[in-house]
Image 1: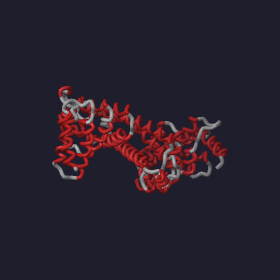
Image 2: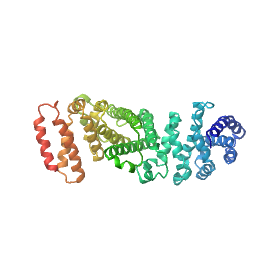
Image 3: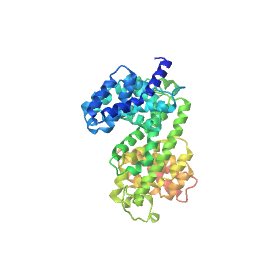
Image 4: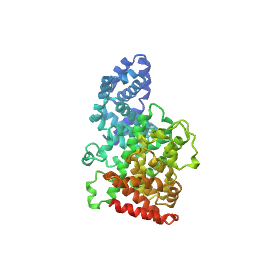
Amino acid sequence: MSHKQAEQEQEQIGSDKGSVEQVEQKDGENPAKTLDKTLALLQAPDDTSHFVGLALLKSILDNHQSLREDGAIVTRCWTAIPVKFLDRLLKARPNEKKSKEETQSMVALAVAIVHAFVTLLPSQMLKDANLMGRIDGLVAAVPFSTPETVVQISQILMALNFPSLLFSTLARTGQYSQNRDSPYFFIKLLLVDIRATLPSLQEQHKSDEYPAISSRIAESYDVLSNFIGYLVQSLDEDESQSDSRPFSLDPSQLLQLRADISETMSLTIEHLRECYDASIAGAGVIVPSAQIDNDSMSSASRFNTLGSSSKSMTEDPVTLAELRTLALWLREDDNDALRKEAAGITDILLALYAAEDIGSDIRSPILIALEGILAVSTGIEAFMSEDGWRPLTTDLKAVLASSSTGSVNRGIEIVRVLMTIVESDIVGPAKEEWMEMVHLSVQALQ
């Protein structure tokens, strides 16, 4: 299709919106009849009918729960959609005849349709070629979409298991995505989704939607941490190995992603603070009412005083996922400003580390985060003021009494953190005593 033909189709599509209301008004009282007419429009040969049909279909599904919950009807509707027309909507771009707002509306309709069916179709249909084949178009539409549409695209790609395509042999063979920029835009999508969701996540903690939202955000963080790991590995590889990488990023993309990830990690720090403060103050997340003398207790002691109620935060999938990602970024990215900001949650990290019945899954990323935080003097000062030596050495003694490989690895991580403290110029007179303990621990772990 030529560029001129594409523009003509976009112009025709944009002029068809008035037909939607006319059909709805005629058959609004009979959803089954309207659905039949809608499917007939979708199977017509012209794009005018296709546009009206898609808009009607979205309206019908939005307003009639009985239709949404009928798997056979949903599948029938999806198979009736002309996917090539969806692709043309996704490719709508501003020009001299179409404004940015008009083309964004076209993209939004296509995305909304795909989003609806990703949600409604039976799980076995999510690998359908007509869904997977839309990945490139969805990713390419990101720069031309509204923030709301970007979030929907992110959710679609997560539901289609696109993350696994980034870090698997499928990505290497390009089975589903021929666009080399797809990974870049996908990571940006995840970052947009996280930043859009975190500010209101705390408020939704008791809502029925929270499990699904928290699961999605936790998955986004996990993909992001895998991506960061990939970047670190790629930077360590020889240039001769670059051809074997599933994708590559140019310098401008790396700089943009670095800024976006740092902004997202800043919001992550704020979210951790919000959750922890709510748990201590009794804002209804962990403890409905807790009267604790915060000033007379260390952060770890305050957290353990909350008893079994503290499990609400430590067992939230978002907590572990965001800690893993934040920890990796703090250690690998030389961003002193972010590390100083993260020093402000040292009390949270140590409280979580010392919480009773906590597993190594959460202690390991905390130790990694401390490595990054202790690279700045502000971090060391925060560690000392929160008596960070105590929970780490207590855990180290438990590690030395254990023979498991996992415990030994954690012991090495603990020693690495403690060595940073004892070698610091700002540590007080206990330095020699601590140094002796660290050296004895190193010998035992070897």
